[in-house]
Amino acid sequence: MNENVIMDIARQTLWLIIKVSAPMLITSLVVGLIVSVLQTVTSIQEQTLTFVPKLIAVFLVIMLFGNWIITEVRDYAINLITNFSYYINIS
Image 1 (cartoon, rainbow, N blue to C red):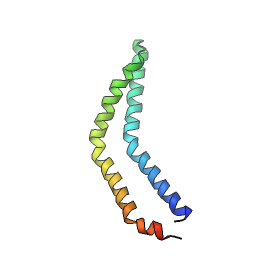
Image 2: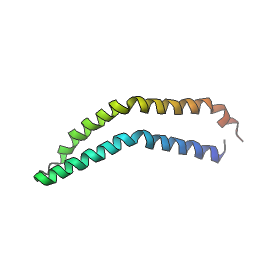
Image 3: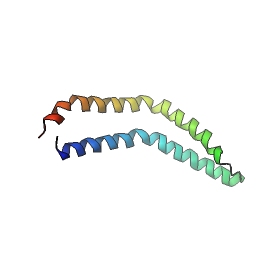
Image 4: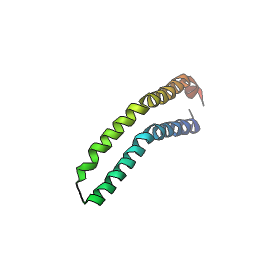
């Protein structure tokens, strides 16, 4: 296994992580921003107030995108396992 193959596997893995975590991260960011604006408008400065809406929103996104996330990770794992002999035989 040479360095190019290792870098390609690492690149694919990082891209998969970014791709499947993006819906949760973006949702958490948007909900946090909305709650922060509401806190500023109402002058309520409670730090724990953003936690529950973010938690609920992220759970909803996981319920909506869970099948897609599992499919993407499964396809990546199948691809990695299928090409395992190719990765070992490269000199």
